[in-house]
Length: 525
Ligand code: GDP
Image (cartoon, rainbow, N blue to C red; front, top):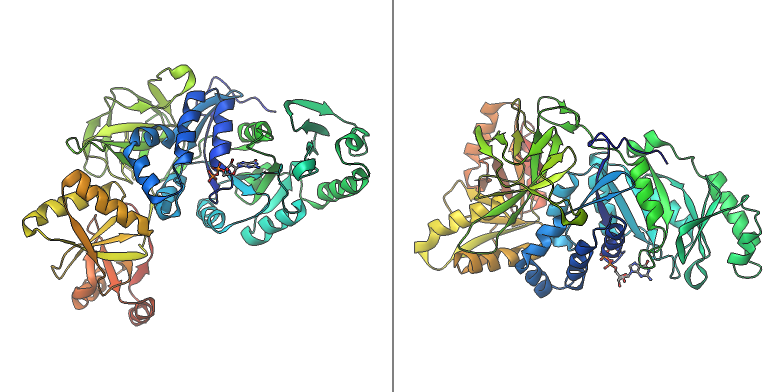
């Protein structure tokens, strides 16, 4: 294993997320990773979350205990000379927008697959988001201690459904009840299921030790299979991995704490250190001296009397220190970073500086929004924290007309946090909210009630889909907006959105207006 340069804080950093379908074992794996890093006190918090992950009411109670989710939003631990920043993503698919934004702040991902289920819907979707940014993926096939699918079939499925080359780094020795461990092709070493910390050197696939690990008579068939896996797959190619075209595959069992060591070693060895981040004017290299960063997540305080929020910022370059000032590009104002929260978990010590790849929490009273760029140097705006056209639109109504202004303010604040998207129709009718998952509507109503004392209800507007509209020709855009006034609304930033009763109608309008671009994704700002 190459030892990262321990003197350089940037090259030691690995910032990643875990992508998986619910139940594949993300939480279990997270706990085990944290144990490796010695961040055990956080592992308990993850567990608390797992127990409460499933149902709506449980989710709401979790939101009430935001302390936990703030802690678990980013988990930093040290292992093997590296500093790992593991960014957590919500378990429920109705909050997938949050997940997409979080993926804009990582340099690599671990894809966890349940050996019995293979690639499931959510994994595929999240993988597609990673592919948009060429995020390198390390694959962990989990639950080998249970009967699963044939490993060849799983590799084939990854290759076919994700169009991603695979290199099995290890190969399972038996499965289910007979799962004895893994064989590593490159080093000809074996790890045994209950002795994860030991490596047994073999002379190769024909080593007699394999006869003792597999059920009687099964070793020869296993040897043929392993040989085929070694010879039939592409050799591991670091640059293909870094470009997001090839995934190294590991087999294990998070529950039995098996294979996790190989996985984290691979993250230390193969995963990239903080990558350059695309901004409007140029790419910003992680090693540049001036501090830059972007906000990808906002967490609100639940105390209705204090509208404090924590903005989670990925540092993209330079060094962030407590007390420094940084320019908020959207407003042009310098803001002091007086109380940045660092999540360095080792020995519960508080670090007071952060480097590229790190995530810091910035407490604020609403100055910071999702997508904001903060810099110490030149003016530039990071791209790539996306906003997706909502799949559900609702008009939000309030019975007490006296509170209309309060509702508008509340919606603005919650939209800045990324809880919902808010659209203000040009025709003066009431605000329309847009969400990706229905659960977000429940959360919005509950929060409006609990935090703002607003009782609201929803009504289905005549629109079901919406798209951001832009044009290279400002005159044509203006004329389109003017002639479709009753179907146009402004989003939070004042960008125009075209709303339509159906996808069919939308396509029809798009065809008739070739100079207008209808887009279902928008970069913040
Ligand atoms: P998440 O929804 O992806 O976070 O999945 P969890 O980590 O909560 O795991 C879902 C279920 O699978 C739990 O009951 C875990 O105990 C179980 N599980 C996780 N990893 C393994 C494993 O390696 N083997 C077995 N047999 N069960 C596992």
